[in-house]
Length: 448
Image 1 (spheres, helix red, strand yellow):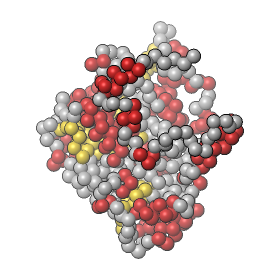
Image 2 (cartoon, one colour):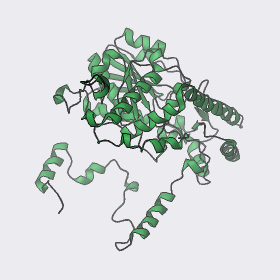
Image 3 (tube, one colour):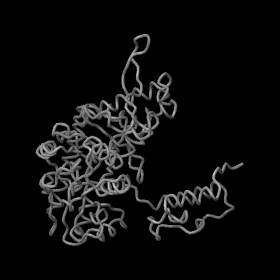
Image 4 (cartoon, rainbow, N blue to C red):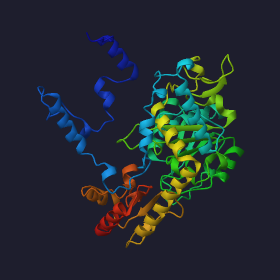
């Protein structure tokens, strides 16, 4: 028997409360072209499991996998080699505990790896303390702004023009419903914006990405000093965690909150997810930090053990005093992250970063030599921006039809802005070889 606890009257009341007339209105942000009316055309109501699998496999086959094509896609989602040992180890019985670790006596495996994960994130970011992960980098960024608002008792966030548009959109959506202001700068293609001039007495925080959307690497120390002098906090976003193998960590430059996307370590590309958000801050702000925090203690016999601590989520305290409604964490992805980074070690992680930068530098020099192509960056880690002599989107569509993905057109991320039409983001990781760079170079050369 189906369990349907809501009556039609309940549904009408819920729709009226949120201000819509029908269930369909909840999907109004989904473009008409992306909606499907009725059943899937090719799927009969009388097929066996094998036939259904074949149909859906054909649908899946329409996706281009970067694992099998020359691909230099990035813009927040990066292709890295994930050792086979990661997949093997995350399936060990020590980690197969209950879904939620509220009973530490039976979830020590989960709590211990989360404790190690937090330690790794704190060391990578140069911060004092990290939580047990967020859902992803973008939602972590919006939580960071809410945290800054609570700490400063102010309500204006200044967003860098070099911040990933998806991160900005999540923050702006949160601002709409949480009642604060998010002031976004124009796309900072050249990496020369002056965020210090935007800080005033109402500014709770400045949110800046490093390396930026366009690949620029900056020294954020002057910005951090300006924020602190005016009572604001500096939030640093890192979408490519591997960059911290070479780039000065945000904590060393004065950041107050650091938010990262950890997908690059242990978590492969999965057509949009799942990802794992990293969140770290200063000790003095720890009680305002959202999400879970695992601490180390001793039991009645003096043995080392782990527990959830400083729990300020709505599940533990009065809702109006909660720091967030983050009720879980990206546990499996956090475990994969921890194992991958542990396998690399400090020297291996640095070597991985060096390989990324070396490959990117070589390919950037090669592409910049093409007629009419300009390398926008003076600095970058493993992702850079090219200005092409013609709009990038049609070029990429053409080459994608040939199963070559030389990069991401910036116009896809920032639509309706003609100033970015000719810009192409190119990401180069340790997976890049001449087998991929050669065809991509020749393909671009042939269409420019």
